[in-house]
Each structure stands twice: as C-alpha cells, then as structure tokens.
Image (cartoon, rainbow, N blue to C red):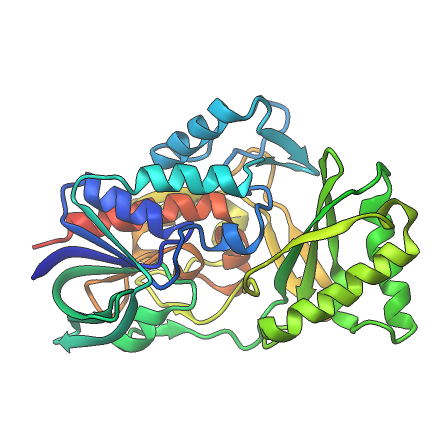
Length: 381
C-alpha cells in the first residue's frame, strides 16, 4: 500500500498538517502513538493559546495567519463569547481543552485522511536520502508496512528525524520544562499571581521544596478555577514530577488563605518540553530574523510572539518584538536539508534556540503544521 503523505504525531501542529495535506488532494495517513489528539494543549491542561494574533495592542485583535488558524478561531468564537484577552503586551485566546479536542476531532473527519491512534512507528526504510517505507504497529498489535511519498514529523520529540538520519540542530543547553495543575475551589484574590511564586520561593529558601519551583506561574480562570504552571528541569520524569508538584500544592494550601480549600483536580499527563533536538532545514530561522521582522520569498506562515526563553538559572526571559511587527517563517525551515521528503513543524522546525522560543507556541504551530502538510502534499511525485 502506498500513502502520499504520512504525518506522525497528532498534536497541535500534526492535525493541521494532516488536514492541509488531505485538502490538497493527497492520500494522507496520520499516525499517533497516544489515544487522543492535542499534544501540548493536553499536556498544558488548556493554557491560553499564544501566537494567534498580531501584536499591535492599539488596534482590535487581528489574526496573524489565515487558513486553519482562521477556521480554529471561528470555531472557538462560536462557543465562547469573549475568547480574546490581553496578557501583558500580547493577546491570547481562551480555549478549554474539551473545546480544543472537539475542534480537532471534527477536523480529522476529512476526505483522503486516515487516522491511526495508538500506533507506534517501528522503523523506516531509506533509499538515496529519502524515506521509502514506514513500518508501524497498530493499536491492535498488527504490523503494517507502507510505501510513502512524503513524511511530516510533528511528534515534538523528533521520532522520524532520529530514525531517518535527518540532520538535526542539537541545543547545548535546554530550557526549563513545564508541568501544569488545574485547581478548583480558589477564593477570589487578585494578588494570587504574585503570592504563589513568593510563597514558593520562601519554601525553597527553607529547603522545603526543590529550587526549580521558583519560576511557577499562576493564572486565574474565573469561577473559582485556576491553572498553576510549574517549571521543571529537563530530565525530571512524570513519575517524579507529579509527587513533587503535589507537595508544592499542599504548601500553597497551607500558606495562602485563598487556596486553603482549593483542590488539585487535574495534573499534566506528561512533562511539557519546550525545546529539544529538531530539524535542520535549508534555512535556520534566527533570533535576528525574529527581531528584524524578516520577510522571505518562500514564506508559508507568520509569527510574532516574544522570544520566551525559560532559562534554568534565571527563569523566563521575554524579548518582545516591536509593536505591530511580525516575521515570516520560510518553507525552507520546514524541510530537511538532507532527507528530501522529510518535513517538520511545531517545535521541530529549523530554528536557533531563541527563535524557537517564539515560533514554538501553539498559535504559530497551527500555522506551521498547515504549511508543512500542504507543502508535503504539493511535493508528492
């Protein structure tokens, strides 16, 4: 059996990649090792979507990218009366996890698209710098080998890139990872975003909690709900992350009256990595490209989120782009420099660490996923 385009990973960028490929007329297969779509959105427990809008706060909200980004926002707006809100110097989109999954599930009901959840890629067959075959195990345990035309890696961890031998950008150091907790029963207190990190720092000074909790963020969601976003050093596994976060939540309950009756109702199902080894493309998007709002002849998406780098020692660092300015993401940053039928999107696009700190956010990932899927479909022989 031959498939024109195979997308691996049904996360924030993977579903748009599959939909764009199918709509371009390519016979498309989406392989996802998990049992649901959503990726980072699921792991973050629905943290507001960043990177959807232009950053000129003097004007009404305006989408940065068209296509599926526009379709997504239209679907959100049909269910939520006020989905856009300001967060400092930028605008973000409010979208609960259930709504996000509903939108993505509807998108997957697309002609020319087959979806395999619970499937694991086992090996790739290579020939003259091209991926010719993919061998995978289905959720039922069966083995399948398919001939492929183009492949798009949207796994976040770069599973296809590793197995194909595609050249990769490997960072020397890695930023902090994330891990979220959803709280209910939170009493109203406008100072909680300040009190939570302050109390945690005091606990760290007393050697009661690990020092990596110093960079915790707290986002009120209304109606007694909130999202507490902890930072973890890369390498902390889920089995260790959740108990450590539970201790931190108990400390907050004990030391902040507004949280004394709060309940931790949901924890991230995985540790959320912000950066790792990724595609080396024909163009490596740079921090200077971001700062200058660079344009490219082969532009396929635009971004303008600040370079949000989570430093291990100093915590989050924001380098904002000039108001009203956006930058292009070229098609060359989505295609492998040496495996010519291999593409990538989301946080696997070809970029240096600071540029990726802007381009990896979910709103931009929707656009780069769509661009990679469409480009792969157009490259089918």
